[in-house]
Length: 326
Image 1 (cartoon, rainbow, N blue to C red):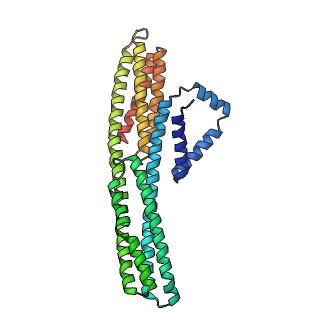
Image 2: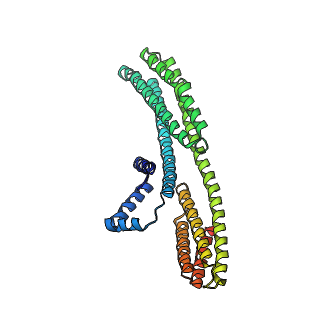
Image 3: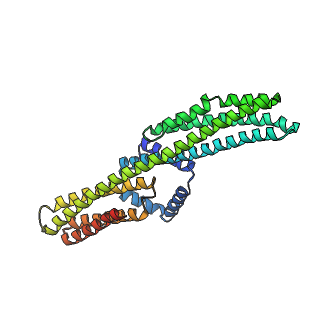
């Protein structure tokens, strides 16, 4: 029975999966549904009963996945806000262009209305930017470019863009094209600065993510190297040990520890794979193959088939070491 806290995290993840639009995630959901359809309820229940479920590990997996999904959601919202900012500037420039190129009274009378609508869009953009900032703060300043976000917000809120739009509207209503044009130019310049700041924020997020992935990947490779060395040492011990030795149980425990270590490496690679295309399916397959060989080796040690175990350990080492050449 899952605890209330774990169930809440599971529900939060499902909500994020529904909200985040991604072709890759959609494909994963479809594959998951197809896999579930191939398993009968009785078979699924039997597998769950036989499995040794670790709720704490499951909860940690949920937390990592939730964080990853929140990051993706934030990136998507930043992209959407950048597009809206660019569209806002385009509309503002079109108002100026129309005002300067026409003398038609009906068209000129419509421009203040368009300017007022643009002011409403600006207000909504500012509100959505505040909501995004709150979402970014949940992940923390080490994960998110909060300073750039603050600067982008200041451009919208403290640079009096809304006031410039209102002046533009009032000037056009008074048929004062000179002052209207001045206010419109001020709006356009400030919106350009906002768009540049948003692009800078997006770029910094991508660069920080790349640095983080590179750092974690280096650490994961080091951990995998340690696993390989430990497995090599155990293989040599296994080859030399008599099947009737009292040390067999100790070797089985050591193999179980190594299996746990490479499982953790696999989880780290899976997490990195959600952030970088550098982690390929082939790498994941090699780790899974190494884990299967280690599990078989552990069983062979328990059954005192020392030579079989050593062979499986050799196969596991080969699969582990392949990661260093990818």
